[in-house]
Image 1 (cartoon, rainbow, N blue to C red):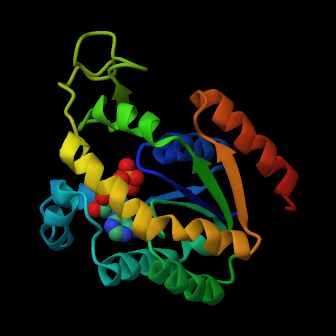
Image 2 (tube, rainbow, N blue to C red):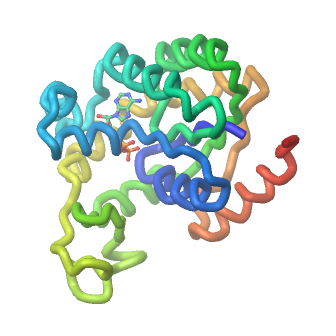
Length: 218
Ligand code: ADP
């Protein structure tokens, strides 16, 4: 069971992926997380990608495609399935991924987290993260116990640079133009499962689990 998780920024791709990864032992491949880690560690990839990330625009396809293909060609992928979170995000990336999947002989299913735009605007603008442990909070919906401090390690929470209001607008516009066409792309291939992501996290997860149970041939 190899999965792609697709949806607007703030639809809950990261949160749901974390649950799925823990439950099914999949390899979690989040391009956003990989870019952020590289930026934090000052790597060449991080230096190349920081300006795009901060502005909320997509990193060029060539960089992202090569990064993901290199990871999918590593030997652990032969024996362990994976979930792609935040990739593909353009039709070019989807075409490129199709070739890579043929090479590694892995079929995929696509979980599409469908959500209202206003809901994600509310979620993203009040999202805060702990840089130390990666835990994600929401000041309105899942606040930390102590104001602005991580429950786990007491670090001060920060707002992602791309979660500022003007950048959120850019990200939503780019998503609609570049990424939304992937819904039709995977629908036409019969690989898409639409999940109502307006509901609470555990309800969304329950729907996903039910679907995976029905589709687990292994
Ligand atoms: P979100 O889904 O909330 O926007 P991500 O962490 O998935 O958050 O992505 C954050 C940023 O990382 C994107 O705005 C973009 O700059 C970059 N990025 C992540 N994945 C891709 C991708 N597949 N193609 C191009 N850029 C990407």
